[in-house]
Length: 416
Image (cartoon, one colour):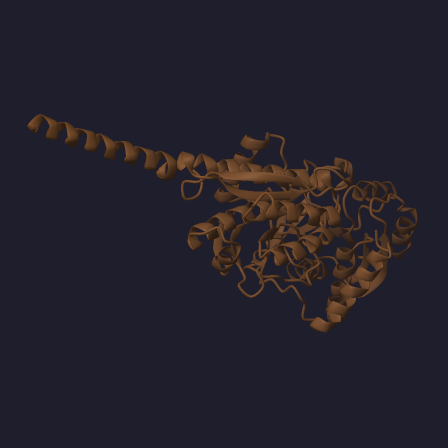
């Protein structure tokens, strides 16, 4: 009887050990926990694929970095990458698929305002969350979007005031036929009026245009103190080539859409007197940025050039991780609430999320182009500049009306 009792106890102990092991393997073991799914939605094809692929690369690097540390709550992150095709309607379809079918908890992405507006409708419908990394024209805010790029009051106003103090009051405005240049130039006109500056001309060309002959001739005749440039993408190569060959590179150009990526398109000999306004330049000389640059180059290749939108994508992912850990949840509403007023020691410096509008307070810098494709930072704001999505020079109703007029033109294909 005693031996039988011992056997029963032994069997019971084995059963407890077996059950405990099964529970650990099926529930408690991090290796068996389901991954946290996140969506990355950028152009892998279409007209903006070349600009947006580096943003995908740095997001995948960020996912790998977190997974190497063990993930979040012992769960790995699984990135589901989708192609927006540089098309707003397709971007909206893919956003819905990612949220509804792929069950992603958050989307990082899109590279244009038109795509963002299309995705905005989707994330608001599903109460999901989008991290948007590009500088843009403002005039928007949503509890379902965290905007990690810079707003016009940060970039355009800061750059313009710096330019007026350093180059003079006679401004020539040139931009692509697109929403961002139009809104930027509305703001420039408002500030120029306050500062008693003079607009000698305001010109727009279709996206991807290389027909700058008439504008170059006008610049040669008017000899402005500075060119305010919001030309987008590869058209900058043609513009700066014709500026150089016309002997006009003594006139400074303050650019709002040229990063290290676009600068690489411009031959070194054509980079004289090119200035840009951003929060982040790869050349920022701080230990935090040195570590960041080294990490990116190790993961993506030594030749990788890091731009402001790339760093803003990285910031967005880090903020999401921090907010998820703070909220102890991946629920979009809880993460959005946790992110409000959150700070982060980013490569560009300390940034914070403005709880009123979910844009970022950050420093602004002016860089002068170098022949090696980097920028020398020649000015930076003394402190972070608070984001103001709706600039105070006009009432919100006025801005809404202006934006609607531009949207109507876009719908009529008057703006490409």
